[in-house]
Amino acid sequence: MSEHAEERLAGRRRLIKLAGASLFLTVTPLSQAATNRNTGILAVRIWPAADYTRVAIEHTAPLKYTHFIVKDPERLVVDLEGVEFNNVLDGLGNKVAPNDPNIKLLRAGRYKPGVVRLVMELKGEANPQVFVLPPVGGYGHRLVLDVYPLNPPDPLLSLLDGNEARPALVETRPAIKTESRPEVVVETKASQKPEQVAEQKPAAKRQGRPVVDRLVTITLDPGHGGEDPGAIGSGGSYEKNVTLAVAKRLRAKIEAEPNMRAVLTRDSDFFVPLHARVQKARRIQSDLFVSIHADAFVRPDANGSSVFVLSESGASSSAARYLAQKENAADLIGGVNIDVKDPILARTLLDLSQTATINDSLKLGKAVLGELGGINRLHKASVEQAGFAVLKAPDIPSILVETAFISNPEEEKRLNDDAYQDKMAEAIFSGIRKYLAKNPPLAKSTLARLD
Image 1 (cartoon, rainbow, N blue to C red):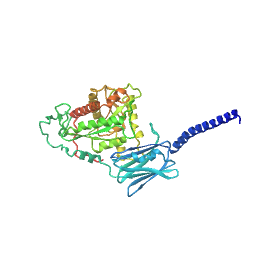
Image 2: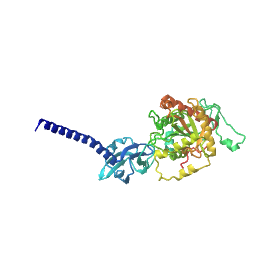
Image 3: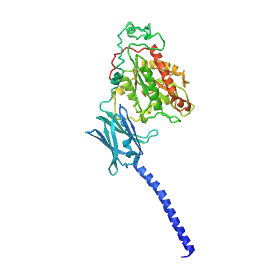
Image 4: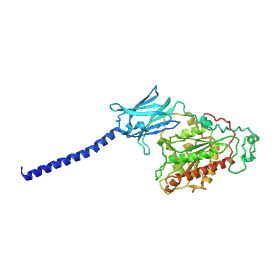
């Protein structure tokens, strides 16, 4: 073979090697991409709480599933059809926290061709709910496994257990003057009947410090939670974390008062449907309901604090209407099982005899807004109104506080600052005290109703 022919043969061999290497480098990623498309499972998220634990399985397309309960030990079994086992499912067991109140362990594996089986071992008897959610916000399709304990925590019993050292005072008990308790006077109105005056609670002479002869119960509602992050700041802050932090600080201030107690609709990172927030407040006969949020807008320069109350006749502004629509969409993002019917909820949300309650809500909102103006610019100088679903308790004065705009970089920094969170909680607390000083709660039985 000539020298020239040998060179041509060597060159051809080099081309074959390069072609083979190129083919290998090209085919491998395409094969992996095809495998990922087949699996469809994008993520698995677990949100543990005493109320219930949620497992959300996000996938690229609708999938078929079946589920059933196995006894001894108590297990929930879910079969996913048309799904291939992947690394997301393989790491499922590591996502269950050791202190999860409801789930002991969770594992997944290939059951048969095209079917992946999930086995969830429970820590006790439970009432699981399994349902699907369509794509919304930044989420794809979701299969939701909600594990409710057979005997869920009772908010009334939890409230009483937390206040064993502070029993409710009986409203017929005469007021006792002590050095730690300021002198009280009874404010009467010319239009009041004698029996109404007898029922009226005494108001403190010292402005801003309510004095009542029974515990005042306040429900604090940290907005969003769990699958619903709420607004997200440019620095990556989640509204759900800010609202919970402020609510916990506010709870501590309320609990420090001798005649006041506070209850959170959620005390950790999990989703609470809007109607359940209202229902919790009504079940313990709350005197006030305060929902805490951190606003967001398309423009990063929007700033300031706001207070909103319910409106029966339309929103007070287009911005209030926009915000109410956005907040009411929390159930779509957080995920609510629409197959669960609640007749008490229907009565609560459709009760339109709320005029007196809305008037009281406006008074509470004005008192809180005035205090917020001392620590932050007010986005609007007056209390606004719109159709917020979370404010629809017909018998509880309710407000929604937008602490600041988390979409504003400067306000986002302040909302994450411990000192500023404490100032925000103190301002809301001062507003609540000023409202109660002028509007002491009416008498009611010591025990809260259960419906």
